[in-house]
Image 1: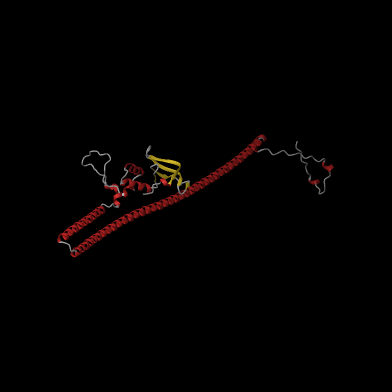
Image 2: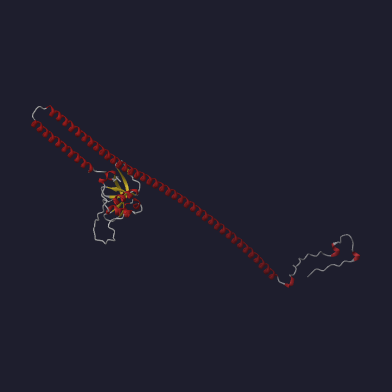
Length: 348
């Protein structure tokens, strides 16, 4: 029940306090009921709606947090990918730098090796030129010695002729004086003249024979070319061939420039199958230019595979490449081989 209002009377209104006995007991205050929800909805619906709104708000906040975390994770992955890309770029750049350094070192090594080969080739050419010059000088000296000997023999021949003529003249003069001073008979004088003529004739014949023999021996005097092999071609396996087929080797094989273009196998074939020829000499000289050395004991060619491990005045020891001409006709490697200089062919 709601309390009733106490009516006021205009006649009893006064400015002072109203006594409690006049108005009766004071009413106790009653709590007001909450306002009714609009539209006549119940409290449960309101609570349900608020709960749904809170759930929606929480879900929205959760979704926002998930979106933020996803964005953060995506940014982290992107940063990680960027870092990996930077690392790959740095690694690629480092590899490029390493490759560039390796190429530069290889080029420097190749240039150094090429310069060493050029220097070695120049030294070989100089040695070959010096050997050729020495051979030419030796041949010239031999020719000059032969000319001097010939001139000396001619001078001796002329001097011998002069001496013979002077001796014969003096002998005739002396005999003439002896015949003039002789007081014997005419027959004794004639007999002495006959004997003198026989002696003079025999001496003259002996001198002529001596000079002729000396002249013949001088004409047959050996020269520097006598030690060389004759260039006449003798086929090893003669076989009847038609007239159009060449019967002698081409002169081009006597040109040293041709042998500079031949391979190692061809040079070895010429050396072992054209023995005693000028072509064998040219092949050996070209092999020596290519750093091959001939071993007189084993009769084969050796080449250094690496720098010798031991080097003395009498030998050197290390790994060598040698040409096997007996069993395989190929190049083989011999380790820990001692090459004694006494077996080195160094006359080319």
